[in-house]
Image (cartoon, rainbow, N blue to C red; front, side, top):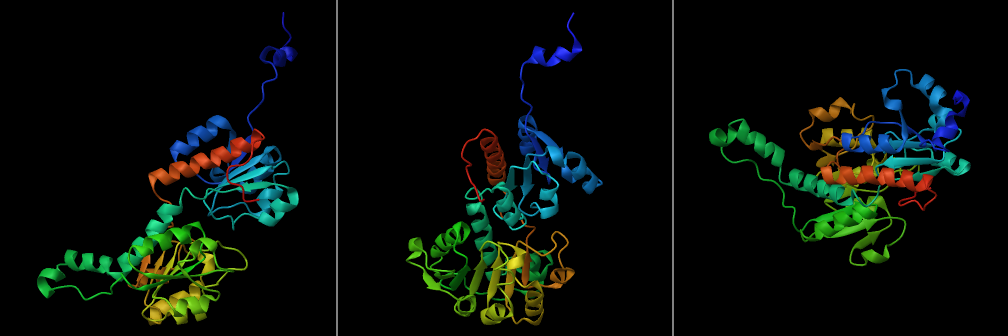
Amino acid sequence: MLSITSKSSLYGARRLPPQILQVGSYAAWDEEPLNAAFAVHRYFEADDKAAFLAAVGPQIRGIATRGDLGAPRAMIEACPALEVIAVYGVGTDAVDLDLCRERGIRVTNTPDVLTDDVADLAVAMMLCLGRGMLGAEAWIRDGHWSQRGGYGLQRRVSGRRAGILGLGRIGFAIAKRLKGFDMRVTYCGPSPKSHAADLGFVADPVALAAGCDVLFVTLAASAETQNIVGRRVIEALGPDGTLINVSRAANVDEAALLEALESRALGAAGLDVFAGEPALDPRFLLLDNVLLQPHHGSGTVETRRAMGQLVRDNLAAHFAGRPLPTPVV
């Protein structure tokens, strides 16, 4: 007769899958393979999140999160065995990177796979705002076209001046698209980029805004970039200018932006990100010179599948001792 204490000898030295803290929900096509590969603890479903972290935190070796949710200090400190954080998204500003560096915790994100979709949305917002497409559609639906005639004249997009604040992957992809509209493109950053010799360069955001008709904000968010698009930049862009933000809300002084849009000191804005989203400031909803998008720059089936795969690839690589596909820290 076999003793119950010898159960481990029956199954051999079977290794349990690494325990993962899942901070936010994913699509079903990502949930299923994540649960198949790891022992997943669903933080976002816990009613008492502090108690949940206290219970499972000591066993957590990896965190799977989203760019908008991140991994704050308190969460990381509750996981003393934590080795890796995989971010579903490009932005890592909501992850306490300093603490991760101190503790040797690896951090990954999902760049490249979402670049084209975010760039497409940024350019689409420029076109939509420039040609007044939402108002023009409402003009038809409300019966004004048949009753009152044609819609008011808008502004040409082709041949105008564009500024890109932060010429990273997404900013460069936007610049490539703008060339198709014969736009003069200038960018701003710490120093000129060798691969952007055909673009204009300025070192100052205010000067960038003063020299363009459409300003795209695409730089990564950090403590240094908070409110980099402030009153002076917005004033320099002016009443005929358009601001497009597909980066992070923290890069734009939202109070100054709202005041400028309300007073028409700024012509228009296309925004995919907001402070406190999804509970954005209700003042935005009263404006007719702003195009609001629900933070879905990467919101295509193709890109979201690729992002989820990259999250799992990074986690799997770490626990297998292989190089991380897309390390940040």
